[in-house]
Amino acid sequence: MPKSAVDFPQLVIVDLGSQYSHVIVRTLREMGYRSALLSPSKAEKLLSQYRPKGIIWSGGAACVSDPGAPVPPKNYLGEIPVLGICLGMQYLATWLGGKLSKEINRKEYGPREAKIIARTSPLFKNIPDGPVLCSHGDSVQKVPPKFHITAVTDDCPILAMEAADGRPIYGVQFHPEVTVTTHGKLLLENFVKVICGCKKDWQPANLIASIREEILETLPKNAKVLHGFSGGVDSTVIAALLSPVLGNRLIGLTIDGCQFRAGELDHIEAAAKSAGLKNHRTVKVCEELITALGLTTDAEAKRRTFKSVYSHTIERVGEETGATYFLQGTLATDLIEAGQLGGASLIKSHHNVGLPLNLTQLHPLRQLFKHEVRDLARALKLPPSVSERMPFPGPGLLVRIFGVPVTQERLELLRRADAIAERILKDNGALAGLSQLVVALCGAPTVGVKGDEREYGHPVVVRAVKTVDFMTAETIELPPTVRRALTEALTQIPKITRVFFDETPKPPATIEME
Image (cartoon, rainbow, N blue to C red):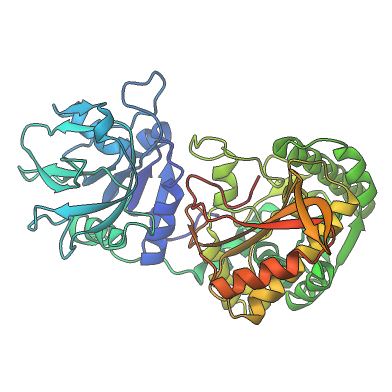
């Protein structure tokens, strides 16, 4: 964002490679506090010139002893309040004279019941015992001198620790920033407000003016801008934000590679109208894309092929229109999962991250999470069909066909199954409250019996999840009546022989099948 008259954020988060580092930023914003997420090297440079009110060391997949592990700057320990999370806590223990353990029985992955044993701790003020999300191999076996233990689990005798001599140093071996940790937000509030003395300084409404200012400062006068418009909440928010200030210079581009669900193009047109997008075009590349995919079944290969066709189409339309910039609804989660932020591990590539374009790419929502973009949609008075819309991956149905090559026939089969499943959930009141409904076509054929005859066809997988930020997700067990209705309706479709229900949470699974 462009520089403004406001002070630098009061809080610095040192990113040690955790998939959840940006969730800390999102949680603090939700609470009303601005923060800056920085790599260790950038944090060290900043801290040599600026003293924030508090510092958080995020977690990470590395171990303290790993060669090349990210290392937080430590020269301010004892001067500025520090909260070490997971790997951050392990660094605190190692550097200050404690000891780590690699014992198998101390490893913890998933929800655990935390027991608070230091009720006078300012970090745990008003926090009862309750669930926390743990994800660690190493653990602290012995706290440093002049430290005491503040929380435990049945398997982890040192779940949290803090300095007992007045130094503002705190460590927790769990993730307070995720929703699984029931009282995590209160713990962060205690650190930020009680320990660091921060004042609330962030409001979502301020983003609208800030994003418009950034784009206007970036673009040369009269420059034309292509915008990858899918009709989802992200791309529609960008259109609604920038249409008033760019007018006809903003060209919405929808690329139809037959990856869309039933009725999707009609929704896209309606969303463009609601956003005030004055210049919108749809380009069809179905035959080109299906031919390019060929016989591939590898998810990443499909994404790369989609990205290639997507990029070539953008460049072609850019030449036709004279556009020299390309706007996308890339979110922080896209960049994290694509391994583009903070050293986070690559989980899967995204079609809108790292496009090989000759147009200058702009990502005005890159610092935001899905729920924040939904807040912007409501502030911009976009209809609920946009603000509450479930996300849909850029490659769409192409990555919901797995284990078998993508063909027009299979796309039509999945498109029909997806539409039927969504209708059944809606009719039964089961669609409300879902964050994502995934209907996928499995390539491994199974035998069925229809009309007393053998049929060899595809299973369909139905997956319903609920999440706040799409970094973690709970699965929803659909009611038995809905399951029966889905199974009966979907197996009526020719070439569909079975219905599976996927109830694996994230982690360990991702939300999409591929």
